[in-house]
Length: 175
Image 1 (cartoon, rainbow, N blue to C red):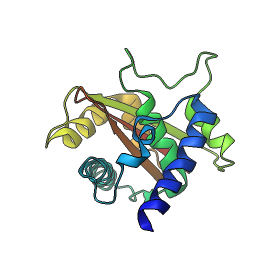
Image 2: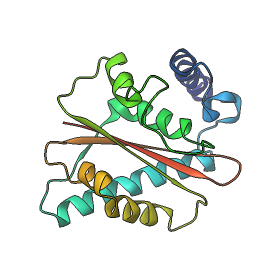
Image 3: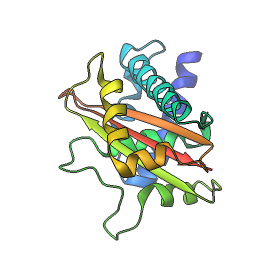
């Protein structure tokens, strides 16, 4: 019963993804292969949570309140991470010069006065990937600004990997 419920939920995500992106994200392409306790899925959830903890540690080290996890934007963060796999450059913009994450937030009717997105990629996914990603984000002035933005109160962090071992992250912030 749980397995069919999980497949149905992934099917709904796949329909939304096809509607938004015109294709299935890698994790949804083979819903029948995703089972409870799947090590690949567990790993992605673990790195998402670890990066959230590191982000909040950096905020607290700079005198800021930690961010709340934003379950409403988690699907958007995961789709944004998946969309960056294999691209030559990470990009916040669509072909018309519009911010993709802002369009997705609006399409989902998610309210915000201020929102931001950080994208990051590592060529290899190893035990230190989240530490390396957070360090790189904090060393980049524009990414650091999002992490330390006082107005932001919540964040969702999505991760995606491909068969080449590449891992991408998308952090979607809202006030």
